[in-house]
Image 1 (cartoon, rainbow, N blue to C red):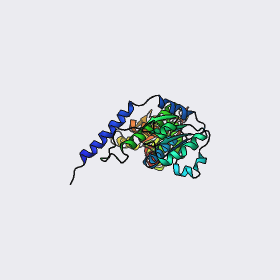
Image 2: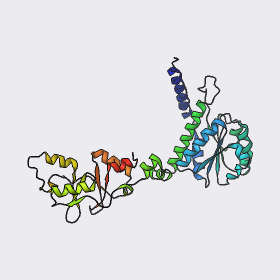
Image 3: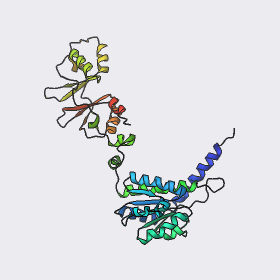
Image 4: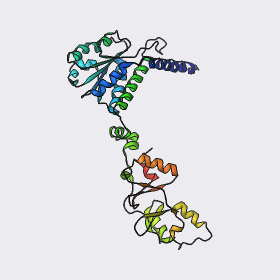
Length: 321
């Protein structure tokens, strides 16, 4: 069996070297590109052919999900009607490593005819694409990772990384926050982590609650009916005083002075950890639960009255990570 570990390592080293070399080539053109894209009233249209087109589609998706309205157009489709999708308030990011892709070059005069700003991403500023561009971002590499130096490998890696760099710069320019990201990702694990709030998951009715004078026997009945493995103990003003967990109950049974008629609060955890307000992200609640190694957390209002409870199982079942 042939061992390809060294070949794989060589590819990664070569591509990593080209990325590091590209760092030294970042110049004022990056600032100009960021300022241009941030200032447009319309969308950023990304276009490219072949592998550049595939990378362009990914860059467009990244832009769109991080606050920059963007979509991809294939140059061939643009020549057959999709140019109408590009408006006067838009800007175009055109990608071609050679800068000479025939299908792409054909649409550039039409873009310039409508005075639409063009950001060119190519190997050379002296290429056809480079000369058309108002702004030029270099994706020049010394060598492809392909042993024939033919298949786009290192160059597409660099193009993708440049797209990421541009996207992150725009996020910083627009002060794009976690809450903004959540609004673009309402579904999936990312959306759940960033969008779902405590109020969406917490229990608010038929809570397992007893008063501070309730016996352990009464608390056990309420715990069984509540099916949360815990009982909330409140004072006469409905303020939370303690939480009796099934663990507290097991430890109580082991004590010599155990009596089922004793007050439940004697065996409960007094001044338990709570969260104030139900508008917190569920992911923050999970971090809180994991930090203090508790299964159930009470959500209280400004008056320290219980508004609801959240169990770790609720978070796990909702896919919060």
